[in-house]
Length: 455
Image 1 (cartoon, helix red, strand yellow):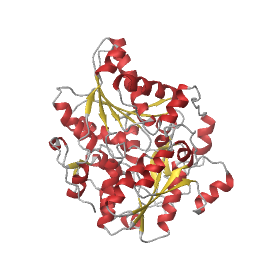
Image 2 (tube, helix red, strand yellow):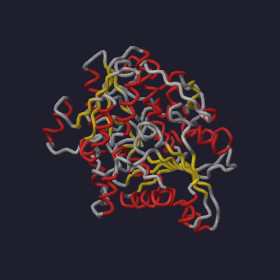
Image 3 (tube, rainbow, N blue to C red):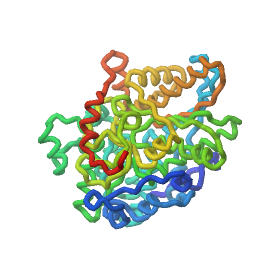
């Protein structure tokens, strides 16, 4: 691997351990199940896909897990990431609220995703793995893992959701620059891809389909592992460095958030900013509201069913207890490709079921209105995914004004939108639209699920 040794005078803000929320949750998530036996999945079931250290983290109940020195050293390229107060946005909204945001767009890949990509590449490298397959929606995860694997000399094959492959060519070029092989999904390379194309030659793809293709390729080769950028426990664990840094940085301001907000696809950036604050809700009787924001066109948290479901379309993954729209659900072709996923991770699903977090759904046009306003007053052009968090932060700030009281708002700006300017162009020219999903459409895919969890 490459050795990185950069001076970072603010390194004391970066924690030395990740936070594992499984240690503190009042109710632990139900276990993942083997799809054939419906028995809890064991380490031996996951070993063909993941290195053993990640499997251990997936099931660990240890509160603090040390960040390996090699991973910490690479983190220092861009961490700690800045915490900003959005003074100009506050002024524009004429709100008594204080608005802070943690900016993850300063990483080499331009998003929060390298926080887990570097860790996963490291653990695979330690186990001697030479090749990894993965999927990517908008390209942020694929970019991050491309960056990480090249540091450790690992080959990478990325199945990129076809609609995003066409919408965001510069993400593909970014991955190619870091040495990754990028394939639009669904593809003819896999049985699962060919099956989808046979049924719908014009399929725009989905994260669920791309996951199936990546897992299928990994299963064919004992020297290849699979890597996932969201949903799973160990992925959310690695992302908690975001919230842990924010806690230290907020100590310098004397403020503490009344509400913490993150956009939501599978849960990685949301869990990263939120879980450390939930830790203090659990342990120190804090009362911070935690809000996950999803697209109205893919509303698994706000309108989905809590049930066991596959993480992919073909059914290669274990059954996971989740809020889901059904693994056969194909989301509309919104530009927030990283949020076009049918299900939520087990941890976030359990937290929502226990009413320890909240969920909101926002339409595409409102998110781009919010992101455009933010860019004009704060200077940073956000990723379409991050615009969802900004939209709800603005809602909360306006509500504070209506109520005539101050509150402190923190949201995660999970990535920049420099490769998404085509989406902004479509918004400004009036070509973007909101997508509505009927109850009947949701019932069609949810109704196909085997009812393992009883109401």
